Image 1 (cartoon, rainbow, N blue to C red):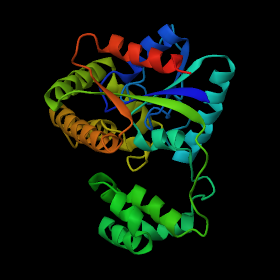
Image 2 (cartoon, rainbow, N blue to C red; image 1 turned 135 degrees about the vertical axis):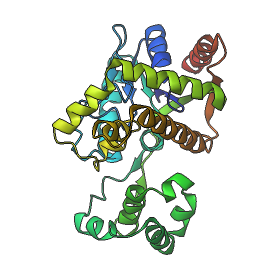
Image 3 (cartoon, helix red, strand yellow; image 1 turned 180 degrees about the horizontal axis):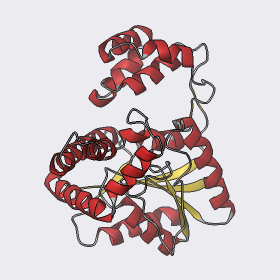
Image 4 (tube, helix red, strand yellow; image 1 turned 30 degrees about the vertical axis):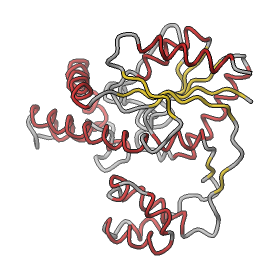
Length: 297
């Protein structure tokens, strides 16, 4: 069975940093599993990191105005994992987008159900309450499996309805990989301090210019790409609707909510080996666990 290492957890936990460390130690290459990092021109706000010693794939796959779905990522990631394995290296999937990770680890196939633009146009006129009620009528099991964030996300509700109303079924194909999942987290006060420092760093690196360039390129505030935390808030500052302080405070609030949603999603899984990033030597502990997994028969 082909080996696949996954590093997951909420934002600002240093997943890519750990991925680079393990890639250097274990002859690996990284694939980003972050739905925000697929967009070109969105580097600072999405926290893209680069390395001179480890290859990182999955950045800049689409324009911010393009439609990029889980199915698009799944096709890209399976192909890249196969290439990495063929070179005798360890593929390391790194990211905090739960749906991307699940699509690879569980090999869920939704590609047979393409977007239905007419249906989407009709459903976009509905409230989230109406969308959820309709989903509950059509697929109560799916509706009850949604967390509170998903229940308030019209885009995800519409996609779930699109699948539920299709005459084709979502299928789960045979698992392709022998996977080890490493999770990074800590207590919320520690994570919040990291979030604050991350926002300060991104503002200093040029977040305002990055968002300005996106707006000048015609990327609308309503686009899927601009739902990435920080982009809408800084856009409203640029447009004069918020002060810089108000924008960064709203950005921090968005990041905090996003972290809580991520933790809720990941905590549902029982196969994650969790490590506390506040511990001084957690990287070495992770390395030992991964080496034991790699060396098992």
